Amino acid sequence: MKKLTISAAVVCPLVAIFALFAHITYGQQRKVELEVDGVMLHLGMTKSEVAQKFAGQEYWKVDDDNWVMSRKDSMGPSIQFTNGRLTFTERFWATSENDTGMALFGAVSSLNKDGFHTCEVTAGVNTRPDLTAHNVWISCGDKSVLVMRDTMGSHTYTLVHEELGRQHEIEK
Image (cartoon, rainbow, N blue to C red):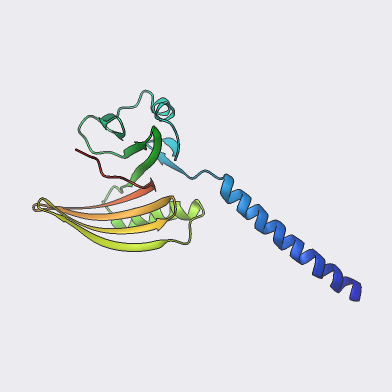
């Protein structure tokens, strides 16, 4: 009986250390990705790598560091670069019946599938003369979900975005 206790006392800490090391190593090696228009993107990609992945697809450039994945002057997922590297992109979660609840479910399920479970939730209002935006962010490190309810004039839109990285303001 004493021999079994000693063995367990030695083996259990070793297994715990191995499991912790494996978890830390996995987390450090794993690239967080986001699928945008059928293309998997990750932070740090160069502009040429991103352009190559979107070869044959339609997109336009607001400027050299801000691209929109759609026809010219249409709304679509944004891609942003800083110092030539991908620092932000997004995916819209839309449903056929504009069901915000199901869009939010899809976006949060995507976070969970990628291993994100501990997140920070914040809310805020952005008011400009032509727009009022009520925003809820679910931030989980490199990935987040943004739920926006924008009012422009008499029109109101609710959008759900899954985001990779942090979006910066476009300088005009």
